[in-house]
Image 1 (cartoon, rainbow over the protein chains, first blue to last red):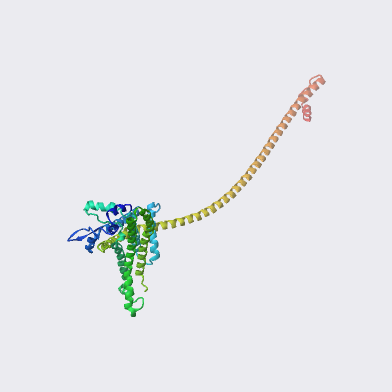
Image 2 (tube, rainbow over the protein chains, first blue to last red):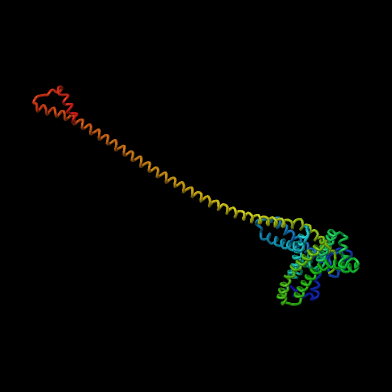
Length: 286
Length: 156
């Protein structure tokens, strides 16, 4: 936040924002493996490159969350739950209640899937509330400079502002939709749903034109909704930090307070839509 | 902001996390919450049963108290009767004892009177003889007058 002055002294507003919206990418460049120094270099790396920053934070937060929940589960008591256990149980019960409401079939995977998605995305989104320069300009960037001798490299700490992360999750959900659709309806049933619905078999081409995009719209909208919300939130924090001078402090506060609603809401929406989609994948009465 | 292998990395990470969550995180909490639910239901049921038991016990204790009171009253009644009986018996005994003592005393008195009479009688015969001797100025042959004297004594 307050580091805007420092950054602005060296960078223009556009440079500052571009810098903060870029990733710390590892990949193959000019025939050897290494870290990208500019966004252009990162783009040149093509598909076989990895955003070390967002991937690392995603793994760190996911592992931390599961480790924490597992530790609570091992110490859990029936008669005398600790405060932490109460908190974790409240989260689990909340997710379980949403699953019971929205999912009408028996599937051992849906509960844990929704818990994972909800809490993991919640944690990744919450990284957005960390002041934008705290972990980057004053945290990881000097560290990278010292360890890898990378000058002025970007470092993003909010995994859900990386479309790779959000689309990776929504694609996994999509694969589960396809898997359960075929498993429950049969391949014929699944394809029939695409071809003979909603207008009967004589309108098959028309049906396909409607249903196939509908099918593919599910993972894309799921992933891009989360990405878009968090990206926009991040961008606004960056604009506030780079353009408002000292007035950024109340502005940051106001936007953070609003963002406090967006963060759990987007995690919740992702979970709820996953439940709805997977429930539809189990429906066989069409 | 281009799609790269991070996309695949996130999918693999999610698959692994999902496996871990399904195997090690979700089931223990479900089991604990289920067990707690059962325990609470059992506890409530036990409480209801205990309340019923308490009611039964209270009714039973009231009954027993009543019985005990009746029994105690009967025992007291009996004891009172017995006490009256004992008192009556004692009274009777005392009366008999008194009568016996009175009878004994009367017999003794009679005996004493008889003895006094006897003594008096013998004394009278002596006095009569002495009187007669005085009158006759001579001795009277006691043996010769034995019959008369005895007759006199028995008439006294």
